[in-house]
Length: 317
Image (cartoon, rainbow, N blue to C red; front, side, top):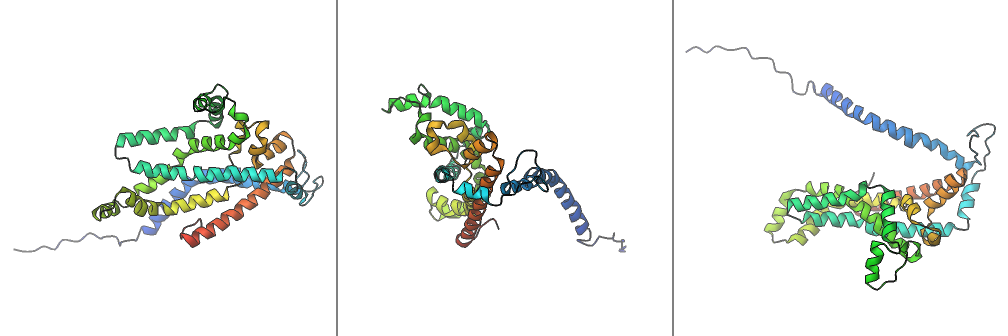
């Protein structure tokens, strides 16, 4: 029997077309990012040019540079810090932000951990879907619902009256505003905020849970020793961003809920700059106030990132 040698087809060298293909793929990926980058540049970076009015006595229509621009240096910053209500704004902002950080930050984590223990698939999906829905309701609609619920004849007022509390309009009660604001804020955002934790939990290796069950660990111990360590990096990053934005309360919700009777506990930096800047036309003064708070927020973010890197090994950079 004769063996006929057949010509072997030339095989391309492995990796020969790799760089060209990689360049094409990366070009496609970056092209998908172009619209987002364009929006960020147009609406986030270009408006930064306007912060120079914080150092001017700006009037609408006057130029930013050249003849007609009135530079006042740090005058508006000094006026803001030495203002009569400065300490009240800072106190209210810190109190409301601290309450939101305490409950609004932990609620999505606890909710994700609890839902991870639900083994009935349809029930788990139903609860998750219901928890997401408040996030997509307009803040104006949510505020209107809350105002009607806590009115003198509202649903929540009737329930509180049944427990012996006085029948009154809780919206105009200063002591009740922090609770109303915090509960509304947490209810609206905890479901949507838990999505990131849900996705992280699903990426944890199931073999770790199997090994823990073989070693006799119950669900609580599995949660403590496997699930929470798996969420550590996401928790650290979200906490850094929350601390950096501690001076940025949900001003839109506060504007819709507060009244002159609750100014002493509800008036924060965002509502103050809205009244003076948008309604009062003091653009330079309120720009200075916003820039001052942004600088403090950046410093808080930097410090929180340093601490997180030292304690957990995770951070934004």
